[in-house]
Amino acid sequence: MIEFRNVTKEYPGEVVALNNINLKIADGEFVFIVGASGAGKTTITKLLLKEEEVTRGRIIVGNHDLSRMPASRIPKYRRDLGYVFQDFRLLPNMTVFENIAFAMRVIGEPGYKIRQMVPRILQATGMSAKMRAYPRELSGGEQQRVALARAIVNNPKTLIADEPTGNLDPKMSYEIMELLERINNIGRTVIVITHEKALVDHFKKRVITIKKGEIVSDELGVGYLNKKRPDEPAVQNKRK
Image (cartoon, rainbow, N blue to C red):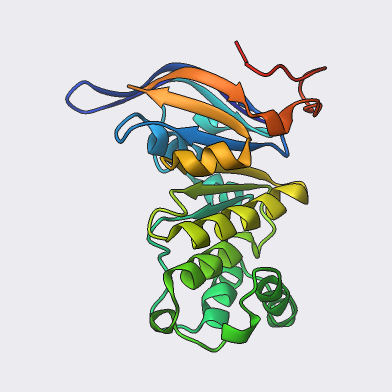
């Protein structure tokens, strides 16, 4: 469970990025967070990743109270989070295989496990044929698939994707979203930050809309009708 309790985030100059928001995301949910540029969407992800601290309020992720988490525990906490950037952030001088293996080496996984897991993840993301290629030799969609593979190779409980299709053509955007949906279907929580209305409308998931730092709507798409969520007895088409 991810829970924001009366969370406010202010930046210097009296800039209020988030204003007293309350939000719950159950384990295994797929959630879109949408809103205009500057609405506060990315601030939510930065708070979840502990890149920023709340000004007021509390954020609970599983058994972790982020407002009370010492800096020494942050690296271990982040192992349960996978993060996908709009600009991919692949290491240019490493092959596809090496980029993914690097994510495992950082947390101290042994070589034999890396040799087992990386090919499996590449197969799952449709990138097996490109494992020896460098990022510059890949299309934008292929680079994003590698970024996704890197984000999930350590089996995180939650995957956060910040504008994962922002640099892709429509066809590739849908393919990336379908891949995210498959990741969700194996029990992972998926949070997608996006401004692409067509994708949101097509995939019919829960949609949280942020405007000027406040949640102005929280709705379930028709794909969620009759699907029982872990934290409530029944799903309503529109959440109050």
